Amino acid sequence: DSPARAPHETDCARTMDYGVPPELGVDPSASGGISTGTTIMACVYDGGVVLGADSRTSTGVYVANRASDKISSVTDNVWMCRSGSAADTQNVCAYVKNLVDQHNMERSDADPGMADVKLVANLTMQIAYKNKDKLSAGMIIGGWDSKRGPQVYGIPLGGSLLPCPFTIGGSGGAYIYGWCDDTWKEGMSREEAEAWVTRAISLAITMDSSSGGVIRLVTIDDKGCNKQMLEPYKHPMTYGELPVKRVGVDAMAA
Image (cartoon, rainbow, N blue to C red):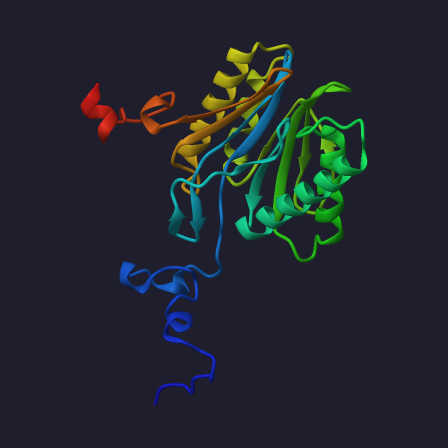
């Protein structure tokens, strides 16, 4: 006999226990628990910061979203890279954005759409630390302000706050720590920093099955912010990779 079903239990709840549609033929018991993965990073260069992330959202062995955006705007000059639970980090970002907006409204000297980078990092840290037993959230705050210039802060799981010249997060970060330590240099130009972040995330995508998709970059300096998306055929080639062919409208127009 089939087990008794709770009154509120639906077929969807019974067949989607691990977030994997049953038609894919994946045995949920083989997955154990749900593992999520990503690659996020940020670095300071001479005059600004570069934030980067892949775009794959995974739920165990199932790719839930291949084109997600893990770099969120808090204000025009401060952005957040998010890893861990997408729901947790999106809510943390929304709370921080609301608090910063309220803070700016109470200050007559505040520039519209701008914020102190360290203030945003401290607000994020406070929320992450006070809810460390409930959240699965690792975040990076990066931005530029007239008070301290370019800044990067890492807020890993647990809610600590680490100011640093560059930082890495997510499952893909474990594969590129050594490469980043070896190739990092102070005082990079904007072009060098963007190329360095792109290369690092490309390496992580190659090695980490939970990272993939496009590479998104956000560059922030005293002139504003600039957002880029690099499709796979624009990624630097890594060890043993085959060339990626262009597909879609861009390929036909080329």
